Image (tube, rainbow, N blue to C red; front, top):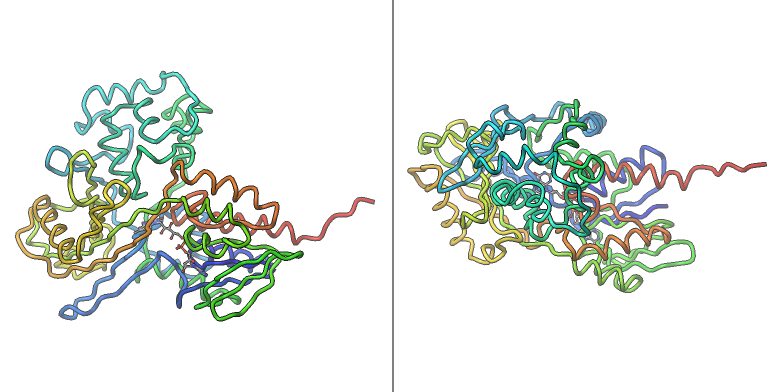
Length: 448
Ligand SMILES: Cc1cc2nc3c(=O)[nH]c(=O)nc-3n(C[C@H](O)[C@H](O)[C@H](O)COP(=O)(O)OP(=O)(O)OC[C@H]3O[C@@H](n4cnc5c(N)ncnc54)[C@H](O)[C@@H]3O)c2cc1C
């Protein structure tokens, strides 16, 4: 029996794939519903206007592997691909939002970057390869490209996706593929060209929001137990005993940690003190997501893109906004627009300590200034994550090393603090670990 602690998207995917392989498991989840960070709310409270609001992830990148899982779950009809306009990305530069070309090749012919940065992109192929231990994202991109690219492309992108700081995140942990391109081909650009994927990937959500996905996984599972918080794990001669808050116990042969690191730090403290200590070092910055809606005709900006990101160097209060109603249809009434704005993250955690009213006021002020909005918001909603996204910086290395060693003791990790934070990463690592664990259950071949 395999015991999985945590029914976020990682634990759900693992349980689903184990069930498909006929491997016995039990999936324990502390809260009343599965899905972890994936939380959609449907707010019908204001004048009967219906909003579909994502408090956690807004979208998922769908490739053929994820598409197949979505079809197996029977929710392919629910899939909502992003509108074409969302290919455009905007970055705040010198006081206004400017369009950043979607394809790196088009950067050379666009006026977003200075001539010297374009030259740096052009020359990257001939820059000598180096191997630098624990290089940060900023160090890597400044070495291979330019400081301007770090400030105006890398910085806002990393703040928007990872709530992170490129001066702290590690290249080989965060962008492992680009790191390997330099090591294997001598250049990032050469690697990108050689590995140019012919496979189509598209950003999607679901008609009723992202929570459709964990709900569909949960409905397929025979052995998901909700509202059971794991409080302690003890090692036994044949595996582990899992203790829960209502004093139930479960005997398992293998244990999979699929919770965030702070939760695992608690329930592993007695049996694995060194691991627990290392988990406690992983930094999760706080982050606030604010939803705001306005009348469409009160906004001058065309909002013809995915959203606008704010580089730290521009000194704004918010990290940027997703133009949710431009990306996906049906998020708000047709005569309104919906922004999802992010505040905080590693680069400005202090911005999350304001009261709700002050935060909402500051968000409205920035939106109205930079998108030329002439009216007050029709609706605002705020969600605070005290511990948002685990940072793959120097502090995470001990936890990763010990997690690898503990596989010898039948303890495995399937969570966003290892091997990728995105939803596809989490789903794919669940599938991969299921296959690996299934091998332990397959009959041994005896050589005569
Ligand atoms: C604001 C935000 C926006 C994001 N946007 C995107 C996006 O647009 N696209 C994208 O691909 N990714 C996005 N991400 C990242 C992605 O959502 C997460 O990395 C992913 O959902 C994490 O899933 P998980 O299963 O690893 O962990 P979690 O979601 O943290 O799940 C862990 C589960 O364990 C449970 N648990 C905790 N303690 C215990 C215990 N003691 N006993 C039992 N159960 C326990 C929790 O209740 C939870 O359900 C975003 C993240 C955030 C925070």
